[in-house]
Amino acid sequence: MYNITLIRGDGVGPDITGATLKVLDSLGLSIAWEEMPAGEEAVKEYGTPLPEQTVESIRRNKIALKGPLTTPVGTGFRSVNVALRQTLNLYANLRPSKSFEGLESVFKDIDLVVVRENTEDLYSGVEHMVGEDAAESIKIITRKASEKIVRFAFNYAVNQGRKKVTAVHKANILKFSDGLFLEVARKVAEEYPGVEFEDRIVDNMCMQLVQKPQQYDVMVMPNLYGDIVSDLCAGLVGGLGVTPAANIGEEGAVFEPVHGSAPKYAGKNRVNPTAMLLSSVLMLEHLGEHREAQRLEQALREVISEGKNTTYDLGGNASTTHMADAVVEKLK
Ligand code: NAD
Image (cartoon, rainbow, N blue to C red; front, side, top):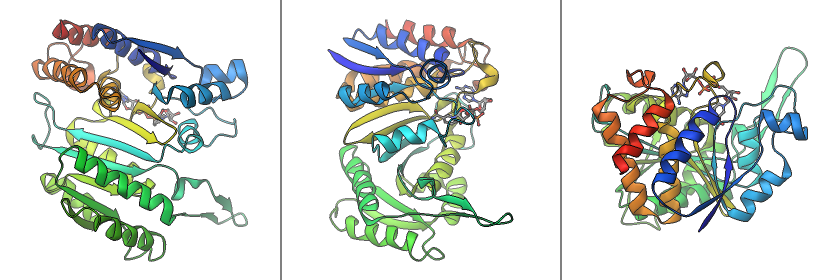
């Protein structure tokens, strides 16, 4: 029996979470969901988008499946999602992007993983105005966090049988901060002689990813570049509706789609459940349920490849629940 914290999320969150629970139920695993408040509803009831009991639940269960959360204006939170990652020290953000058969895209054979540092860099929140006409944001890079994230990327590569890790940076200009990240990456790489290592400057990396993405495998980078480069990779395989993420740390792991709460589609049962379904595939992998993870991913890929029961963003006109039902059918 697995105890898993569940956060349904704001906006389209309840739609995609409902659809995902239906699919997960059909796998027949024994899961006790502990549903916890967060986001807009939590503000109404508890005065905060991230109540302490929700954080405690994740600490206790060490695992959560989470829908997207809107950051309410004026709560003092820069972003609830960033706050959750920082509070639980979920230092590694894993964002795989793999081509789907049946989806139109420039490349057909993409299999990329961005490993994004999740706790520091320009997301540390050290930012202020300097007088009225200038602003300053501080980029923080530490040896400790850099070592942890680069080691995470290499361990992931070894465990998944992947061949290469590329460190992405701008050390030619940011000689101290990104210089430190690169120095640490080179040092950690020496501990993994079985995995090829190289580095790329982030601007060149973006161009290379658009021209020859097949050259790359696992890419590790500081927070901001990871945010941007992972969306670029998502765009290469079909967009935000199909891209999952895992936030992993020593105190727990939170699985969530890369996309946000898409408020204009809230309650319309229209958006694509794929990103949330693939996030639960990552969750099942994390739990060691490799067979079920594979079954679920395969069923979903078949539905997408057939193209008859897909949502608007994939060129179809199925609802969220309809697409999830098609996946359940495949799993029977
Ligand atoms: P968004 O990702 O919510 O939506 C942008 C657009 O992408 C949507 O209008 C829609 O056209 C498309 N889209 C997103 N998800 C889709 C899906 N599953 N299927 C089909 N199309 C989809 O980005 P936004 O509008 O910039 O952000 C809305 C809110 O979400 C903000 O409050 C933001 O802070 C929050 N957000 C939360 C997370 C998170 O919870 N991890 C991540 C990003 C943004």
